[in-house]
Length: 330
Image (tube, rainbow, N blue to C red):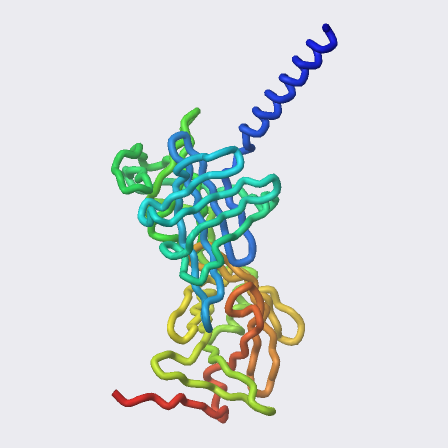
């Protein structure tokens, strides 16, 4: 009987311990990053926010996700229900698996229609949030649902956030004051992030000057090249400034980013780390494919450049034939 009682007590204790272990998830706050996408978790006492940014291929160009969610319900230790408050009909969840976080949801709203509906991030990719200072005399921490019932911050208060470059207008932040943790939105112009570099890393500045200029997309034709022009759209191009600013024109839309680092390689090649406005980034390999015609290939990431795209420097395009699409007269 004693043995049976001992076994029952021990078994009950083990079940209780397992239940507590499952319920007590390790802190998730921080930035989960990979090529082309970021996931940010900001845990608070009253509200937890999840921020998701990514770029993905769409037709001949690229589209993006720019999502800020509030955790509506922590359904279980393994799943959270998310909401944007704007598109209530869209159902989103964040799965908390042992080795990764899995975001699932309906794209239209904060993602383009071509989004796959799922993305995942390794827990091992976790990075700490940046710490910034409130420079405004006073600011209200605004909840995502649009209400004005948030705590007031004063100049000098520290906030934790994902300080991406360039910064969006509204930034989800986390404020720790003693045992209390609050989350909400602040305007980027209310913040000072002194540890955040605003442009190109100094070691890459000289290499960037050699790449600066406008580069026009070309395709191979026989032993030469061809520039194509389409009705109602620009000729795709990439414009690089010496400061590291990069504008990628896909023809009917464009994307602004910042080259954060340039690593020089053999034969005039380079590797570029590019950060985009919504926090996503990608690494592009710049390869000189034709020194006489000044033609290069940009390749990398998972979106527009994944197969490689050829460009010629705009001031060296003379002699390359142009194929213009016949346009219907109005």
